[in-house]
Amino acid sequence: MGLIDLRGQAVVRDLDGLIEHMGRFEIVPRFSAGIWYFSPAASRFHARYGRELGIEERLETAGRLAAFGLSGIEAHYPNEINEENVGLWRSFCSATGIRLITVIPLLFWDAAFEFGSLSNPDEGVRRMAIDRTIAALRLNRELATDFAVVWPGIDGYEHGFGMDFAGARRRFAEGLAEAMDAVPGVRIAFEPKPYEPRGRILYGTTPEGVLLGRDVEAMLRAEEHRRALAEGHAMCCMNPEVGHVLMGFEELAYAFSWPLSEGRLAHTHWNSQPLGNYDQDLGVGVMGTEQTEALVYTLKMHGYSGYFGIDINPERVPVDIAVRNSMDAIRAACERVQNLDHEAVLRSHMQPGAWRGWLEGYLVRVRAGWPASLGEWKKPGAART
Ligand code: XLS
Ligand code: MG
Image: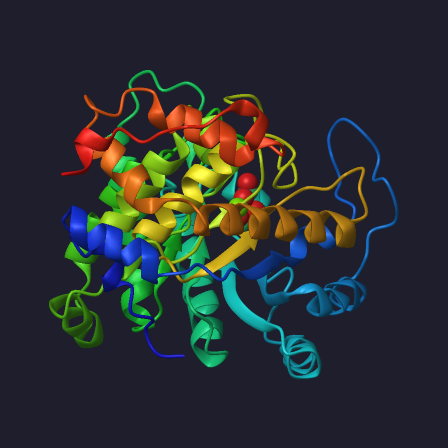
């Protein structure tokens, strides 16, 4: 797979251009799932609810989801996909038509990464993290994936007193740039998370992911990278996750608009989550459906055509049912958004004085099953000049 062109996400449109775009561009969601949650997971609070399943058994369940619209799969290197079992993955993909869209370097599990991976102050451990990232990027290139998700769970701190934060960030960014230059052409999709498992994780919020992308790109030296950057392609992109964004008390649509406005949104991870709290990884649609719709609206405004990656932890729901519910919740959100009166929605923001309260009343009616009984809802005619 060559570099996917994300530059269209950053196109600046005036009101008329935006109205025209919203009428023309339709999100037809494509879905992927992470293989990590297709087996009951261990937790420090309770026993596994069921036996741990091997990769082959997990893939069997995932394969059955192709009939319901699953078309992508994601895996970590080397615990889920590696040089030895890559044949298994290849036959899964050709038998089911499901594509492997990312190989993710496992930078958080090993005991060696107790004090961080790419940011580790111990050069030997940091080297191990860089080498693992390089090996994962090679597999991405060999298997023609779309990008490599990078999620640093342990690069952070609890007691930050006197810590050289700038130094830790520099080690992380330089390590990532070094790995990228060793395997040119593989795009990164960085996934921020504000906390858990560390008390605080480096680059934990969405705009920090954008900053990391700019910093890393300034460090890239490989010819292929310099050329892509000169042509306006971003190489160190993002994969924000709904749950992580809300854990950090960010506003969903606004947060995603940051990487979108720079053509950096390579991927998206979906679930649902209360504000703050621990990482619940609830199915999409369990809560916050209005936020899901607001995010879909913003994605449509920027012409997002990437995958909708389902990243959940369905502890008490069979995984196939949980994935189907999440895909259906996203389909329903896309459908509702597609059919809105875009001209009115967009104008209500550009002429707020004349449209006071209109959007709230409109969305109430759109979501109601019996809108007629709520009475007519007129647009302010004066504002339409
Ligand atoms: C964990 C993350 C993880 C990444 C992939 O909280 O969501 O699953 O998506 O490493
Ligand atoms: Mg995720």
